[in-house]
Image 1 (cartoon, rainbow, N blue to C red):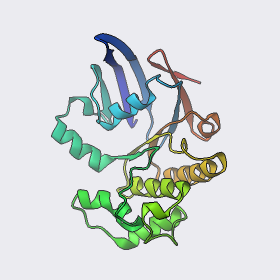
Image 2: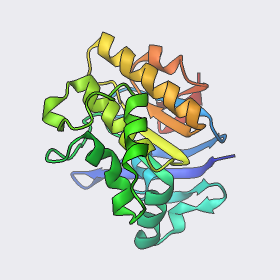
Image 3: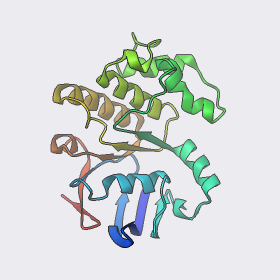
Image 4: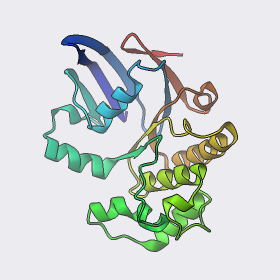
Length: 221
């Protein structure tokens, strides 16, 4: 088992009134499993990913990653754990504009003070169809190319867990399909445990299991 979430609760306050987002949420996700999370806007999908990434903290409950309770970590330990083990693909890419494609991909390794191999970055970029765009900056790339670059950057550290928040949400249907084909090919070839938030049932169909986040809980569908 890769992820075990137990009795997870999260609320936000609106005009001093608590708004329940996650309500005693429980789920287990197996190693190398690719899981989709569907849900209406405001249902808490992005909040769930933020908790799994350690970017936000729960009100109560536990998140176990390979039997390690990340919800009990200090912020310092959590930051280090996230850098070593978790990759994140955002809907809006968050690429560094003044770096080219190779430099953007290598950035997570440099942050961790790891040896950065340009050949490794080039091979990874070629595998996502960007072999001819190695020296291009983000503003020279299309939306689909930028998202494929973001996928490569998230995978360069060979994370054990990949979290993706609507990775095709800002793309047109045709481009989105091409990007998701690359996405699924990469995570399955790496055997990466993946949790994918999406609004698109067609994307969810490509996953091993699909859940719907509703009333603060995950329901298998």
